[in-house]
Image (cartoon, rainbow over all chains, first blue to last red; front, side, top):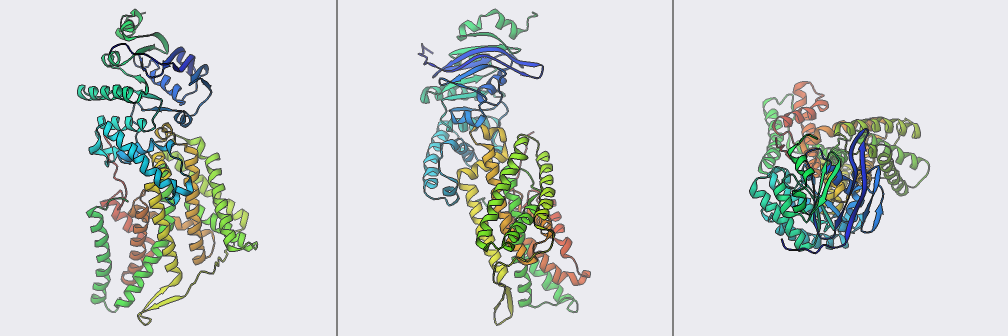
Amino acid sequence: MGERVLGDVILDMKNISLSFGVMKVLNNISFNVRKGEIRSIIGPNGAGKSSMLNVINGVYHPQEGSITFKGQVRNKMKMHEAAAQGIARTFQNIALFKGMSTLDNIMTGRNLKMKASLLEQAFYWGRAQKEEIAHRHKVEEIIDFLEIQAIRKVPVGRLPYGFQKRVELGRALAAEPEVLLLDEPMAGMNLEEKEDMSRFILDINDTFGTTIVLIEHDMGVVMDLSDRVVVLDYGRQLADDVPDVVRNTQSVIDAYLGVSH
Amino acid sequence: MQRIERTVLYTIGGSAILMVLVPWLLGKVAPDQVFFEWPYFFEVAIGGLLSGVMYSLVALGFVLIFKASGVFNFAQGAMVLFAALTLVGLIDLGVPAWAAILLTLGVMVLLAIAIERVVLSHLVNQEHIILFMATIGIAYFLDGFGQTLWGSDVRRLDLGLPNQPLKFFDGALMVNEFDLIAALIAGVLVVSLALFFQYTRIGRALRAVADDHQAAMSVGIPLKHIWVIVWSVAGLVALVAGIMWGSKLGVQFSLSLIALKALPVLIIGGFTSIPGAIIGGLIIGAGENVAEVFIGPLLGGGITDWFAYMLALVFLVFRPQGLFGEKIIERV
């Protein structure tokens, strides 16, 4: 992947500490995300990766530290407010709307883009009708992009795992986010599915210029995809650099191979 | 709209055929006990269908909240009573009927906001059983609060709805005008709600919240607004049910018990289906009335009380998700 020019800092995490009671989950973590990059957070189980993502997304509010998003320091932002500001995400354990079709699931991702009032919607009149049609177009584009045309009308509860992951990605994409948070998008997939997913992630980054923050276990995938990598272990930050450097950092190797400290 | 499966059509058709065939046969076999004549049969059946629509009205409120939060709202019956009490109370204070209806609707919206603020907002992401317990609390509070506010006497609710029997076929077939109007109102309500849920952003958001709170918030759906909207709509449905039932039976404590009649309707129609609430209501209403008149005499009468529940049990055995309910397949 030749030399990529990275944009300005879009998301800046400074000295983030998060604890649940006496459990210190994140300890003084600092890193930033540049516009248009693919940024990975890696680390062994229990390193605090998902917690970090939840902090960015407003699920958890850290006790210490500051988060600057698009130049604005934010405090105690709620999940749906984060969504409104352009942060979309997927979940480690797929969180889809199981009773709804693929199409409807992805349509919910357009929720924030729709402006029709309750009354207009109640009578399916004025903006409500026009909006449905316009957004339906956008959703069809995403369905084409992710190659899931065939399962458009299927309730997602009935889909195989790999497809569910893809639909969840589609729902996040539908919001046209500036930053896309992916929590283990390839967990539990076979090689072929992993390759498909990697291709989608690269395409999203390339086609839409979406900034991507990624958590992943599979080191091979991470090193291939990422522009820069943060390594966490037991809530501490071990390294933050380009993949080639991280790969050769001794503390990272130790953490992954389990050398006694 | 949901695609209608073949089995559903067979079940509905089968129930209809049974409902005609059994009384007819009984009329032939035991003419001393069972009086069977076609016009009389249709009068009984139509009367049943129309009262079934009244059950549907109540069931509808349950379906709405169940669809949007996955919670069986035990308080729906209490909401019917509370709406009716408030309406009658306002009318007795001299407020004109149309204004009283609007004001009551306002009260129901305020109630929805209060329920969200005081109860639901603290229970985000909790197990459904916990939310269910909360609705039991709300139910008893509303029962008591409504009667403290407006007294516990039986009150007459007269909105001037016509209540004359309409005669068809030279008086061979009589149908109550009031029942027809109730059916019409329920029909309009059901169709508009079904469309609203299926084709609008808020409808989709409501279904999304029912499936997964956290995922819903992550796509930017504000949980609070959705809960207020859905409880307000359930309040509106409770008000309509309260008006219809209140006009029929008078406004009294037993109104909150008609919620129990909605249970078999939900089991037959499916907890998540708005059209199911109507079909379920029709089957229960007609089945109950026909059974009481034509089978009842053989069993010594009084079978209306349990017939609906027995029918629901039969459905549970063969089709636990109800006619139109979503079949949930859990992956293990």
